Amino acid sequence: MSRQTPSDRPLTTALAEAAATAGHAPSVHNTQPWQWRVLPEALELRMVRGRQLAATDPDGRLLAISCGAALHHARVALAAEGWTPVVERLPDPGDPDLAARLGGLRRAGPDPDAMRLVQCMRVRHTDRRPVSEEPLPTRAVDEIAHAVAAEGARLQILDGDQVLELAAAAARAGQVEAEDPRLSEELAYWTSRADDGTGLPPEVLPARAPQTTVPARDFGRPGSLPIGPGHDRAAVYALLHGDEDEPDSWLRAGEALSAAWLTATRLGVSLVPLSGAVEVEGTRQTLRGLLAGIGFPYLVMRLGIADPAHAGPPPTPRLAVEQVVDSSAVRG
Image (cartoon, rainbow, N blue to C red; front, side):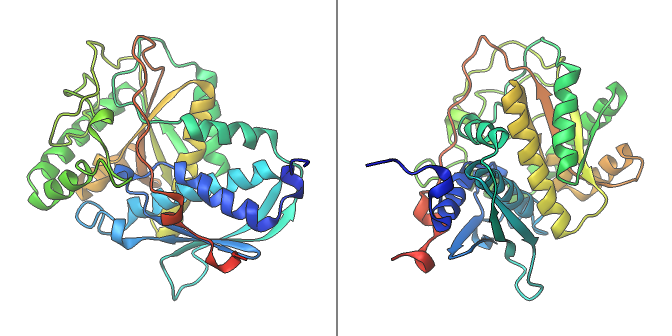
């Protein structure tokens, strides 16, 4: 029997596989707060409020960013299969949990760049340890910034003084969150779910606080990921930002995060998103100041070259495909 090529497989197969591939997307605390529905000629993405961080993220900013990352993953997976969709973001004002609909699909040639990014999805990971002393090439920073711009957001690279302001803001945010028992309880919940496919297992959390210019999140408990003696002096810090601070812009910010991270993975660059200073209103305003009040901050990114002396952390667990992809409308 001859094997089907991407160009002759049914559309519904491509849609279901794109939704499954999107399960590799990053999400805050690995909550994976999305649900896909495969239709005969479209794919729908819904936000799952049951996996929203109610205490940390009451406005749903990080929820939407996480779903935006999954949306971008699905778009790239479809492009790799030779399909170009029309994307409607938040298409139904009466149904705010319907994040996006991908329809109007037309055939195009399989995109080789997208095919490479799909491979990057499978190896992308979050390494919270200090990066190496190797300087980050300017060309790599430019490519990552270009990937962000292509998704309608912007990346501002922070200078030395701005990084110190960011470090102070991150420390203040960490203190505020540590003093809130609701946030501590929520964090404990998502760092103690080793067997249900979500959350952050000990293997991906540092065994002790890493030496970084910008303080990392205190997860409230040590992990088992070994930390070397290095420091991240060679890291580059950047602000992902845009013109609006509304759900549709948060969704696009997630798409930009995904594009940046997959590009970074292709280039051999370690990317770690930092959301702590965005989660607290006061420090979020500090970040707006770093943007000179022009634009709204969505996330901080730390970029660098991973220390080659240490193997990367294991991938975080993932929900089973049947838990996040509903194909009942096209079965049979």
